[in-house]
Each structure stands twice: as structure tokens, then as C-alpha cells.
Image: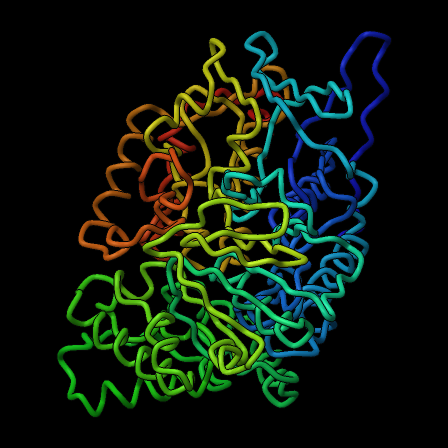
Length: 560
């Protein structure tokens, strides 16, 4: 492990902005690794984070039951072998407190904190054509300049609360799963409403139901949820993975579709067969095996599950059968059973006894699919003219995903062009990393890459390393500048279209499509080509001295 720490920028003269080589926005996994890489190069870096500590999503999402749905052994940094060997997870799927502990450990281990500034929200980033750099403003009055601006704001970080009529009239307690209080919330003896049944809600509902006098769950669209099968981490499995971690990581990157390969405590390559070319018995055996394994391993099942509706329906009906088996009341089971969209066209959820929770006497499911919430009152929630009086409301209403956090920053490029205008209708970003007209601006885990559809850890590492190499090639001197050509950006958007043609994702109103946010243009926000295809495209982008980019190298970089 390198002990190099980036140099501290000199204090500016009165009236001058503090100067950095790079400013990073966001202290999640991607932002922390980006800071580490640039520190190793000895660059002057400042990372701004709106929260009071590191963690990104895992700093803010502290709701009951919050945990990762990718195996802990795979949802972790791979760039440092010593870190991989020394850290030991307690559970197969780590809970939020342990994930935050891991991230704090990494921040300390790699000496990241001296170059971080917390409780600071970046409000604007404006390109300065004279200096070929960025002027960054924050809500605390900071005005700094940097050659490079790197937005590591995450694809699930901008929480959303629908504009319910009467929201300000409600007199009880309100909570948002994506901005949960740091202190413990005790729902004992309360009547509680949970609005939403996506992943966060599914995790929270199973815990909240055990505390409350009565729980009302307001569901617009049911989710497909699979058993997580969480438990203490199998130590034999941990030893086997650690003994072959380099090979395990290689297989995650090169052989999997989504970046995770563990099935039944073994590495398993994706199934390259069609679900329709095998017998019903063979197909059922694969589905049953993955059901018993737990988690999201259906993403590596039959190859045509997301491109062929008939194939997709075989898995969808299998999961529907399982839902009916888990819920005692047939009418409630029917309400919980998805039928209006293909399975996996919205992100799969994973649970511990979620469906069984509706067998409790103190849980009521209220369908708002055909009769939306009319309004909130001082006492509660009104649906179909009936008021459900509650002491607390939990809004599990999802995220303005992928573009939401970036769009809330006033980003202005060459000639004052606004990034939101450039992305009007659909975001445009070459390799998901850069946009035309915004030199020296990079996105991590942003739109037009595949972070929403693969293991975000592996994508973050690959993108960070690509950006780090690009900055090293171009340098940080006055002349340094890089952005994609218009042809490269256009070609990438066409490639995104080509690889997604025929995908069943278009048939669901999901956050993949931006369809969960009123007024947001409906467009596929992520790349569907898979991790290995993305890696190959990124390598092509580095060929011939970054020939697809408009590059001006600084003198010291050219001489080096």
C-alpha cells in the first residue's frame, strides 16, 4: 500500500479562489477510490461531501433492515490485495452499519480524510475557458478552482418524495428511507404507514412490522422479490474466496454479465442457453437451484430472459408461484403478484420474510394502483375516501436515479452551456464518462454507463482507473484539456441503442427508464452491454493516444 498523500494546495491570496488539480464530489465508493488514486499521483485534490462522513448511499440509507443485495465478498474493493485479505465480513450480505464501518476503515487505511470536506454540498461547477478549468461553489460559501471536476455523485443518491396533496398538513412523524435519521427510531405501539414497495420498502417493512401496533403498506406496483438467504458468512467459503481472489475478480469482470458470480457458495459462469431450448424439467431445476441459493443470481440464468418475452414469462410465473406459496390470504397474494411488466425489467428485490410479513394480523396491504393516494390529512392518508390514521409515515418512494444528483448541481460548460440542457430528452455521455462541451469534467457511476445494471463496485473501480490514466496522460498544466469529439459521443449513443434493441427493460416504468419521476423524460439511462463489453469499449477509447477525444496535453505530461 502506498503511503503517498497528495500535496496540500497553497492558501490563496486575498480574493483568489483556492486552487486544486482536481475536485471530487461525493464520498461513496467511487469518490473515495478516485481520491486515493489521485493522491497516489501526488495531485492536489479536494473531495466535497454533503454528509458528515464517508459512505455515500450507505451514509444516508440507515432505514431499518438496510443491507446490500450483492454478496459481501463481491461487494468490496478489489484494488488492494492486503485489504481483501485483512477484512472479514460478518454476514453473507452486509448490513448498512457494517458497510459504513468498512468504508470508514478504508478512508483511514488510505489516509483520505485530510483531503475531504464534509457537510458541504456542491451547488455549481462552471467551466472557465481562460484557465481550461472549473470554478466550483458550495452551499458553505467555498469558491475553489480545479483543472478537473469529477462528479462521483452515485446513481441512487437523490431521494424523491412525490408532491402529495396535503403533505404539509400532516401532523405526525415523517421519514424518508434515503435520508433516515442517525438516531434510532422506535415505532413501538404506533400505527405506521409505509408508502412504496420497492427495494428499500421491502427491507424496512419486515423490521417495522415487528415493532408497530399496526402497519399499513400502500402499494402502487408490486415488486418481484426473491429470498436473500442471509446469515453469518460461511468461513469456509470466505477462505476459499480469499485463496483465489485474483481469479475470482477476473471471472467477475470478464465472465459474468453483471459482475457477481457466487451461486451456492461457488463461482458460476452465466448460463448461455435459451430458457426455451431446454426441457421444462431442466429449466425448473435451474430456477429452483437459484431460489434455494438466494439473492440476485437469476441475472446469470438463461441468456434470453431479458430479450424474449416468452422466456421471461417462464421465470416470472415461477416466482409468482412462490409468492402465492408464501402468502396465506389468496386475495393479498394476488395484490402482491406482479403481472404488468417483465421480471428483471425493474431491478429485482431480495428479502428476508417479506411476503410472510403479510400473514401477520397487524399488517394491512392497501393497493393504490387503480385508486392513488388522494391526499394527506392532519391524521393520515386518504385512499378511496377512507382515511388511514397513522402516527408516522415512511416514504419509501425511490430515487431520481442516475441523473438526479448531477442535475441538482448547476453545471455549465463551454460558452455557458447548461448540462441539463445538453441532456434534455436523454443524457448523453461518451462511455458514461464525459460529455461534449464540458472539458475536463468526468462522471463516475453516472448515465450512459452500466452501473445500474452491474455490480457497482467493479464499475466504479474500472471507471476510476480509466479517469486516472486519462488525467496522467493529459497532465494538470495550464494547457491540459480533454473532452469527447461529437462523433465519439454520437457513436456511443448509437452503440447504447444498438445493444439495448429488443430489451424488455423498455416494457416497464422503472427508474432504469426515469419513468418513476413525473416529468422526467422516459429514456434508457444505462448501458446494457455488460461489464466485459464496456471494458473493451473503454480500452478502445484509450487507443491511439485517446484518438476519440479532443486532447491538449500540458507540457509536463508531453515531456514525460
